[in-house]
Amino acid sequence: MARMKLRKLEDYLQGVDGFEQPKILLEQYPTPPHIAACMAHHMQSQHEDIEGKLVGDLGCGCGMLSIASTLLGAQLTVGFELDGDAVDTFRGNVVEMELPNVDCVRADVLQLIGSKWEKSFDTVLMNPPFGTKHNAGMDMRFLEVALRLANRAVYSLHKTSTRAYIQKKAQEWGARGSVVAELRYNIDASYKFHKQKSRDIEVDFWRFEIGKE
Image 1: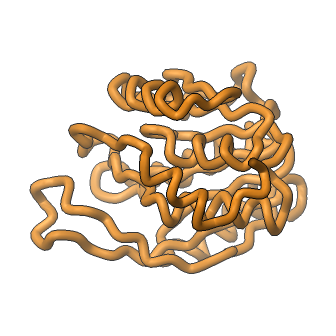
Image 2 (image 1 turned 120 degrees about the horizontal axis):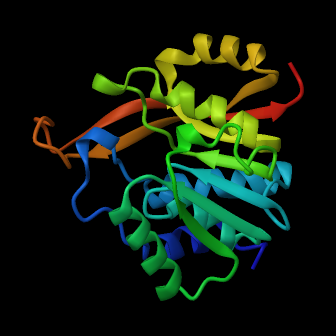
């Protein structure tokens, strides 16, 4: 299972149920199966950051990244999600796909600093709110929490326009950040304020190494 090919992983992830009614206040954009598969596959094939590891998924939504990690052999994956509807969908996906060693905790990610989860994970991955509109800076607050929870590495998606700022903040927080890939993230027209059917956002896929500035 841990050596699952990229295409097969993506095929599995196509079966993950998403948000029934996305909540605009929480910036609930699902992580597309293709992007989730590429992220998880890179994390394992290039850095061995999943197989046999303890993995945390912040703002996990319906579980796309958590399930990808589990399919690639994580010892245990724990997702954290504030929205109860998303937690229910996450757990339903796990039951339907008969996956072991994966769970979802209903929690506010921003409250995890100072909790029992600090330094509990080898790897933390996330597709945080991009910090747009009323959520300004939210992605950076998620990143700060992630760096406190991980012992080894953090993987995250951030808008390309914020690259220089993220590099600077990561160093301040004791981590060395590098852009693994540049993506065009397609957001479906889930909300009324999206005029066109879908739109692309330029996004960086980051790896942050803990304890190396």
